[in-house]
Image (cartoon, rainbow, N blue to C red; front, side, top):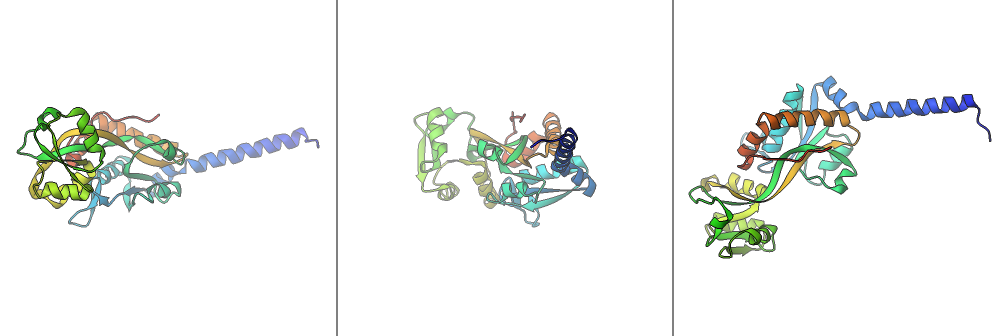
Amino acid sequence: MTISRRHLTATLAACLLLGGTATVHAQAALDNIMKTKTIRIGVPTDYPPYGFVGIDLKPQGLDVAMAELIAEKMGVKLQAVPVISANRIPYVQTKQVDLVISTLGKNAERLKVIDFTHAYSPFFQAVYGPKSMSIKSFADLGGKTIAVAKGAMEEQELVKVGPPTMDFKRYEDQAATTAAFVAGQAQLLATSVSNAGLMAQKNPQLGAEFKLLIKDSPNFIGVAKGEDALRAKVNEIILAARKDGTIDKMSQKWLGRPAGELPLTE
């Protein structure tokens, strides 16, 4: 079967036109945000200190603050959409939200279905204790009782860096571990920042604070595949916030420590 040059040229032109249309459509998110003056961002509302409902029934936390910052810098209204772990990525894929800011770690599997901005905050495991107790280094953990969940990464990592005289008090899960610390059964608590945030929210009278970092895992903002213009705009905002100290201040306020060095995406 022969194809005329005119037919081939017309076919190629149609493909180019369709391809161009697809590209324009794929890059529509940023234009639509600026046109409607509204950005839809998925945020957690049950995961302090990153996102939770305050006594005024309004969402707050580090992830919520980051969403508010992006909306402010883009000059648009924020529409905060509550998400949970199970639906946060599907919401981005199906364009129910423009971005998701919900303690999202980056890995190879997730990169197959969504894109990521630069990291905006740390997520970490740490040692927490009362303000009255001076803990400046892992050596200071010697002779201290530390509440940990059985088999948890926190104990495994502390054994590598702390003195052998640490006294671990092991409990069945994170909830029981936290309850034991709150009840005064251990001097210190080794847990994730999210669990510590929930503890602080429920028990402000303890005055527990961040003491030592055990392990750090940064959080990234999720963007739909192909929305490179929106991703570039958000990256621009993140870089400026890192440079002027806003990122560190937000982390200090909500996590009890500066964000420090965070990875950049390509």
